[in-house]
Each structure stands twice: as structure tokens, then as C-alpha cells.
Length: 111
Image (cartoon, rainbow, N blue to C red; front, side, top):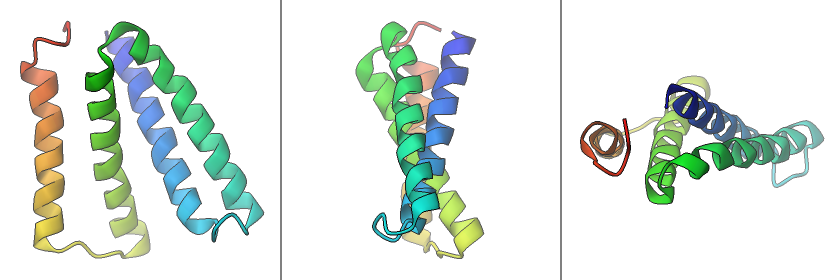
């Protein structure tokens, strides 16, 4: 199961890189970020296909999307000074808590 989580983590990182590049692509008018966005999303979905073979789809997607939201928000906040107010941070905390609850307490995942 550790290998599955590592591949899922790699898919999340690829998606965060792709989303960051997409924001910098200026609606696909800048070649470098555009290529990185497309390649990053392709890699993310390819990597995501592995955990989907051994874990429930809803659980994989909840982890992938939840962690992607939290990480891309952190990247935008730290690297691009896109400020987050208390409500945004609280909401992101709830998303992270949800991912943790699913992973630690759900019987849907074989640990």
C-alpha cells in the first residue's frame, strides 16, 4: 500500500505543478508554461490510474483533489503572495481534516 500512496503523492505533485504552470500560461499564449501544464496533467492522470486499480475511486479522488487544493493554495500563497484570509485557511483546514479522516478511519481503504 505504501507504493500506492507514493504514486498517488506523485500524481498530486504533478497536478500542482501543472496547475501552477496553467496559471502562468496566460490562456495558453506562453509556450513554456503551456507545455508544462499539458505534460503535468497528462503525467498526473497517468499516475492516478495506478491507485485507481487498487483503491476505491471515490477515496482516491477525495485524496487527490483535497490534497491538490491544499497544496496549490499553499504554493500560490508562498510563491505568488496570493493572500488567504481566515475563512480560506479554515476551509482548507477542513479539507485537510477530511482527507485525514478518510485515510485514518475509513473502512473503505485496506490499510
